[in-house]
Length: 113
Figure 1 (cartoon, rainbow, N blue to C red):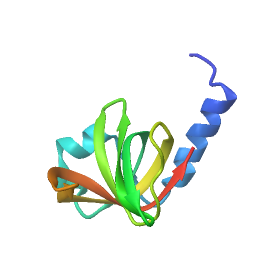
Figure 2 (cartoon, helix red, strand yellow):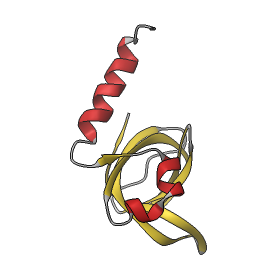
Figure 3 (spheres, rainbow, N blue to C red):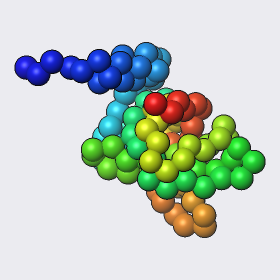
């Protein structure tokens, strides 16, 4: 087994500590069975691919190795390319910039890594 580098180990510890109290999931897990996660608190880690916001409100799309999902935020929006750990509630029927995107996460907090 390969030895974890200090940075990777720190990122793993951060992700675990950040998501205590919520269910850790991949984006593919959420998208494959939204009813399992609907109205439940989840933790997802990924890279921001798109972001938009005004006055600390907006949304952003994150991507992990399994897929992409939109995050709706009232706590500020991270910039494109930033790695984030997101905690929030899964909901369906999301609209982003006038387009239906289906499943999304309503953020309760995020941390840029």
